[in-house]
Length: 252
Picture (cartoon, rainbow, N blue to C red):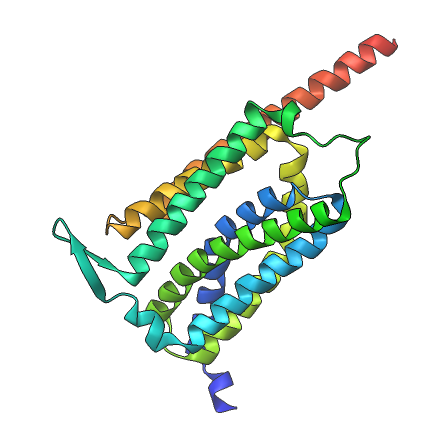
């Protein structure tokens, strides 16, 4: 009980929670893109399952810290470059993210009509289930990658396992609250969706570089993304004003 009165413990908790939320931005954007492929009635369930799996993965990794830290040990070397288990996870996770984001950009930009749902044709129940669990499987794969990066970062900041788990639970709670409005906003604006996919391409490149010990500070990526997002929000407001003005002129 006395430990709860320690201000250092609370400072560590809030700092780690904030960091986990920031690191979870990648997770939310990836989840929002994939969930947008599902029928409307399945999206909330997919968000809950996806973020629930992210929370479970982080907590299980925290409870097996000795194994997680063992992943940083060198397994073999290629051309003088040491490769660890963590490097392999980041490499394959980064490549998967690059492939998935590039494919989604192609669908969004080049093949929208081909892949857009046909309102008159309803897919069978088995096809709907297959699509749903396919999306959940892809979310689970990238959850593991992001969770490993998040847990290793947490270990470097805080010593108490209880504080780490509490921070993860709090961060995932915030992510669950934010996931739906973010997903709806991304899905409503195709230009924002392409921008989010471009962000995921950058994250995939950063993960791949990290696998070869080339650290790319995520702050650079987040600042570039925030600037691009601000510019696009201004463009959306300008387009909305032009459309409203055109509608008013045609009605007059």
